[in-house]
Length: 74
Image (cartoon, rainbow, N blue to C red; front, top):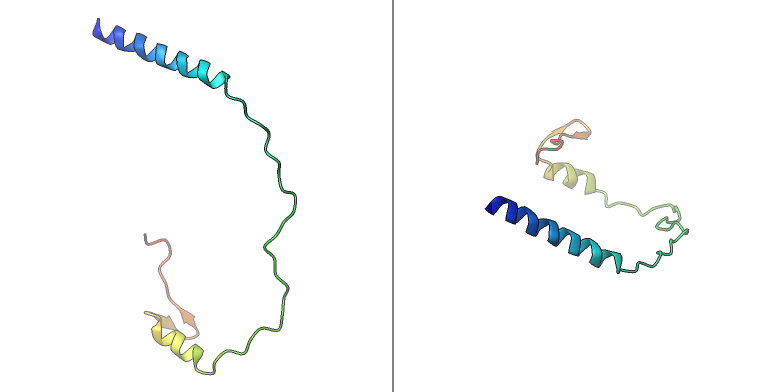
């Protein structure tokens, strides 16, 4: 009997919720057509002469001109 009562209450809650949702008015959202976030290409800045050396010194594992790193280790 208790299971049927819980089912009846759950059905009533769902019906009340559905009726409440029917009253909600949603206005259509305006979409932006403009694509942004691109930048102009430039010449770039000169890097510090020892940057590459420091960069590779901080890497835990290297092999020649490559940094060895784990992929998706989380």
